[in-house]
Length: 340
Image (cartoon, rainbow, N blue to C red):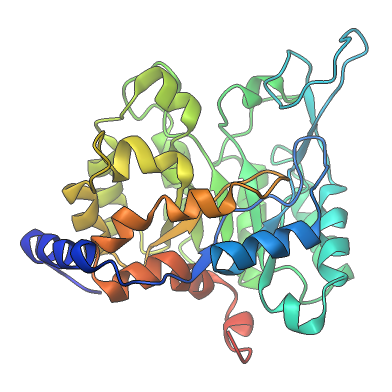
């Protein structure tokens, strides 16, 4: 672990920003190949956008729910929040991911890392379903997620009870993840839209504590754009993350685009020194994600948006965050393959 003082980080950042000679190679650690209607712009478009954005590797996942076009709605919604119709758990999303992956050439497949997500996290049969899926395509799946638990207004729209990251059904999934050496990308909001305290923190801490052999990637550190709209900046987030990263060595943070502001960059677009210091203390525990959903045109814009922050980090750390840390959490058998 690199332990760099804040003054050193800032000096290195100033030097980098003045020269701006870095050419980042990216791993997109959070990408949904399909949208909430299980539709996609397709693999040809994704490959083109990856080339344009200098993205070498992507986490390839579906969406574990499908949005219903309700019988009494005259217009098809464009997003899960487009109207009040429900969403439902949709296991066929993994079939779409497997199909897209298998159509790639052997060389192209090295750049794609499929994560399995099509299961109901409230169902204690979920681990059995996941095991069957893993056994049907041995070696294909490299992670589990994005697992939806506390997820803004989507939670209220999904049929059935609201999932929690610390429930019994998911505990069974985490045991399976440890057995297969699979990382878990978990969406678990740290709070609600209106509570200015870490209301749901215990729900993510329990799995971290009880399943130390599972590598958990916390989607956008428990925040979301919807939370930002109502609360702007959570003043407890940075200190909470600092404590959790020290306490739980199996915790990794997905810095998706929705965290860029108001956390990593201030209102002037300048890197936040406290976040620079935190990542300098734990340089192997952060990764970038576009969190695009079925359409990929914004991938490059989102990832390039991190450049002012990356430029303020030491070059080695910046490349770890931009590309290498995601690859390091994948199953060991994947990391041992050549040309990774």
